[in-house]
Structures are given as structure tokens and as C-alpha cells.
Length: 172
Image (tube, rainbow, N blue to C red; front, side, top):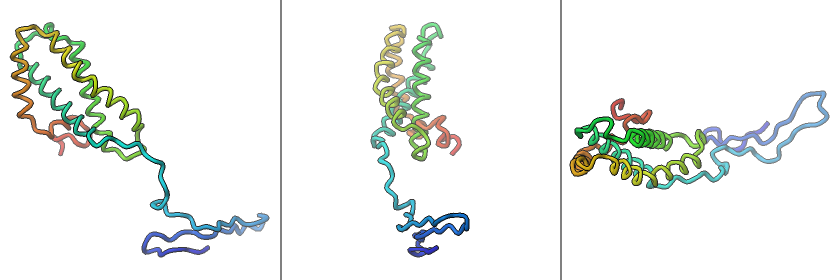
């Protein structure tokens, strides 16, 4: 068995393998050196758009401002459309999951499905928020808008990673 390349540079490879079993009728010979895995061509991976992380961070911060503003309003639970609020909370959880997925090693998840679902959720967010706002009592609209803007300006960008496994600002 021979080596090619230097062991020190990590490029040592097998050039020939012979089976020395007397019962075998021949040998297995590899005429070419086995390649180092770092040199192998990998399948083309799905490219994640560069702006996806930023879009997710902005969406999470916008939702956080909305949730905090709703919490500060003098509204009863019956005045806030619970089904729509729950959907936005689930969407926020999906965004947190997507942010966590962006930090995962390639091959650990279905990137195409994650990208498809995340883009769809990001595209639907403005209309979902508008629908929630429309169903709030009219007296809440001016205060909500002011509170959202004020809260959003004061949010720390790191808060986009609240509840993101491994990235939660409270655990860092």
C-alpha cells in the first residue's frame, strides 16, 4: 500500500489496495489515488439569499414592538382578535426557528423547504398585521401606532434572537 502526498499536509492518500486473502482469485487495485474529501466537488447547495437573515430580524423586531404595544393598550382580551394574535405568535416562532436554522450546518435540514416556507411567511406578514390592526377597536388605533413606533425605535437588535436556541441574548 502506498501513500501519495505528504502526511503533514493532510493530503496523503491510498494509491493501491491489494486483498491478500488466499481464497480470493484476484486483487482489488485502485489505479488512481483516492481524493481528500476537502478536494471533492460537493453537490451544489441551495443558496440562501443574503438578505434573509436581516428580513427575519426586522420582522421579529416589528412583531415584538406590536406585541408589546398591544400589551400596553387598555384593551380586554375580547377586544383583541385572539385567533389572529395566535397566528402572529406562531409566525414569530417560525421566524425564530428559521433564524436558528440559518446557523445550522448544511445538510442537517431541508434548506429548500425552510427557504420556501420562510419567504412565504415573510411575504404574508404585512397583511396579517394589518388584518389584526383592523379588527381592534377604533379607539386603539392612534395609540397603537404611536406605541409601536416608540417601542420599535428602542428595541435592541439582539432582541431579534429572543428564544432562538443557541442565540438567545439572555443566555449569551
